[in-house]
Image 1 (spheres, rainbow, N blue to C red):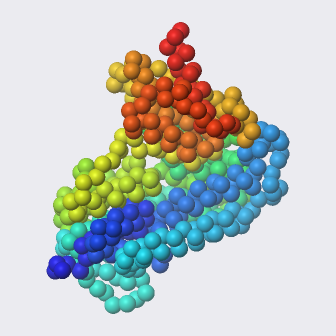
Image 2: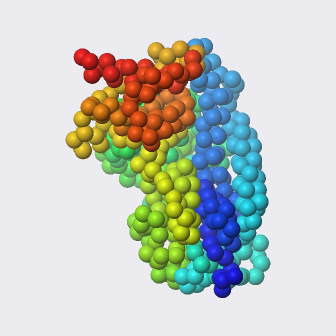
Image 3: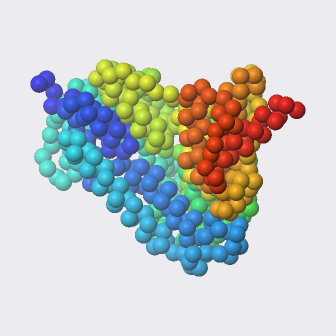
Length: 467
């Protein structure tokens, strides 16, 4: 036994922290997870990924969204959808996920400590327990910081949790507004804007950038924008918000002022201009650490901070800030801490944007290939030409393949439409093994399935080569 209380202490129990802790426990290490909230799961389970994606599923089901192309726009599972209808499903899923995560941690022999952690020195942490128990100091051979982020709040914005909201507040709505302005068209802003639009809320989306989600293929984003406009979303791109006012008007309670002089009125405003690292209570200076922009932590390729035995993973290190990538970062950090060789393919991490319709991509997009001077060809399949697309009523879906002009090696997969985040993994697997589009031509897919899009897109691309 070493002089340390634990071989690894993980601060934060979100996806990154969970996987870091479980990986270390599988290596027979003494592990503790410190979580300052009364429940495990972090932002992902309690206010972020799981609640928002559950909300999306409730919206799609209750609004009849998936069946509008077959039964008409007026079709709904329930005529008057309330906030309670949406929250019911969220509460059920969140309770279940919290129980699953806590069970996973405990059955792997991990100590779960409900406390707020702060550094005393690089190897020592002070724990302030949430139940009021006496403070305790613990010594850790290695530490993983996985504290995640919180919604960024600017001082000049009058957040009240009722009319002017952050993404953390949106799940506390007591009623569905008739009109909503979303400030910030990042991943979170786009997801919520499209969800509320599917509920027939009149949504206005404001962003100071001319181009949305630059890491996503431009054609895919253009398709999403078209779909948003079809759902009556008004987009103000290249516009900057100078202020938000709460008005004494029960029907139009918020006014958003733009730098251009425009004024937008709506019942509620969702201010979603980014996330800030949840690091302010860690007393990082006692460990010899400092934060970078937005109170995030800087790490090397092994997720080590400038102090070698202290790692940082997940949203607290910034982009891509996805639960899936955070889990992998946590696993890799633990393996590195204990000298276990690993193999990962970060360039093939998939991105999932749970807008309505959803988007998922893996590999490089057209802009990147063009910038790098890579000769490529495109193959596309529309859901509407696939039998399964007709069955499920998705007339907007598109699967796009990018492959090398000479070797035909698959370079990128970009999908918008139903099941995109599931469908993308077929292309991801082929890319991981260096496969070509010929694989899709020679493979038999179940019929009728959306997976057939791969064969159709591959044939489309190869036909272009023959022109």
